[in-house]
Length: 638
Image 1: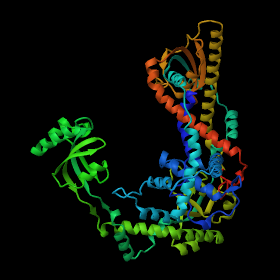
Image 2 (image 1 turned 45 degrees about the vertical axis):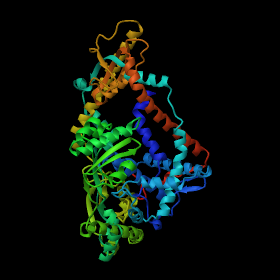
Image 3 (image 1 turned 180 degrees about the vertical axis):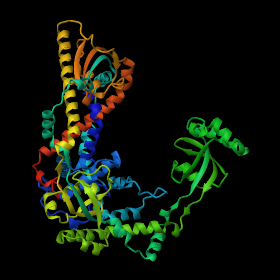
Image 4 (image 1 turned 90 degrees about the vertical axis):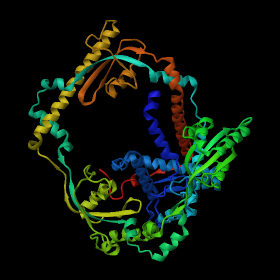
């Protein structure tokens, strides 16, 4: 059990994240209702359909989440397989089932809960900590969303979280189980290994022409030149529309005047203090310290270092650095922001005790000039207007590339686009090609290499490859896949046959040796003389051995020793393992790690319980899936 928890914890967490966390994301929500799919849904939950547009949005949002976690080099093709598409659909079904159950249970989310959730969205706080409502509305408008519509969806998403969270909160791990997990985690094993390396058997392999021919015929794809194509494409993006929008100067200045606070920094003050913790005689002590520092202000730092009950600032002679209004507890902050530089005041009472405060510096509030922020304001205004225009532009783009499918001229003239070209494309994205290129997108490639596209060389449909980015492409040259002749690849084939046969011989020799060792051990005879020197391994210290060997060693039952097992070691061959003895963990080590493992196991159990609860909700609803409608719209990926 522990091994499963240890290996799959992050996976389980991510699966649960996809299932129950709210789907609201500013970027990635389709804003153009006119383009919502009119085709049949991809699934039906109860009496509600899940549309193809919802599926596409979910696929795109999951792609963005994975790219944030795994980096820009994440292979987008991993989300465009039948298995990945089916998993995304199951997530949508789960979300819809939870939403229906929440509605049935009349779970209500208050306005205050919605307000707090919005306040937690990054980027919506001004430098002074207040909510930037203008930016909030601008971001929503750029995505063709209204505050009311977004907040309704947010309210629904928050309601969806309540049921799984209630189930998760009931999970716990008994202390005895935590101790057992810790003991298993910390135990060491002393083993011996004997490697049967494929490289040691190459001299025993005789590769003849019949073997080469059989391997060549049995692995046709391995010696194939993949089909290739040259294409041209056009790309419509919200950013491109934004760049073409001219915003009147008067509007820019009016926006600046209405939102000056957004373009400035609030006043900050620097202070030092001496803290006397609350307690009997605290005020009298504070008043005495106040009299001392007022009689000789130059000694404030020394007295703070010697007498302050705040160890963090005392080490800095009482200095707290610069801070803004409201960043400290209210009585302290109110006092500081009503003082003059070098003024000493006190005792000021707060929840921490009594403070003697000295204001040492002041940074006045500052507002950037219009000229300094003009480009930022213009860019925001352009993006806001482009968001409104993109719905209409996207629908027009979609219609033009479909209705006049043998040319891009109409969309070029209508939107001022440039026809781009790409050469030597294959069905799968080339690792050397920019992953951000439209021609690295799996859906675009699937559409280009569909049977219809190859036959007719017409424009693909408009495909959304990112929020606010549509692309249409068509083939201008296509070369079918070709198998290289045997004469041209015979050396390569011979090498593959030699490697495969050497590996087979190594595995057979290793398995035969393992069988002999097990037989001798069963007869009570001393075995293992041919094994290597003893090695002590731990789960956290493999002593240089491969993960496969370590895992195989820990799978050996330890009721009696010596005990034997073996494992394939990849292309290197086969390894025979002898378990010599098990070294129990020290109790101190178990006690130290048990609480951490208990917390980890509790999280995993909570996630599994939540998943089970979601499956229970789904089972009470009629769910219909239409997997044939999940393939990329341009054709199936092959």
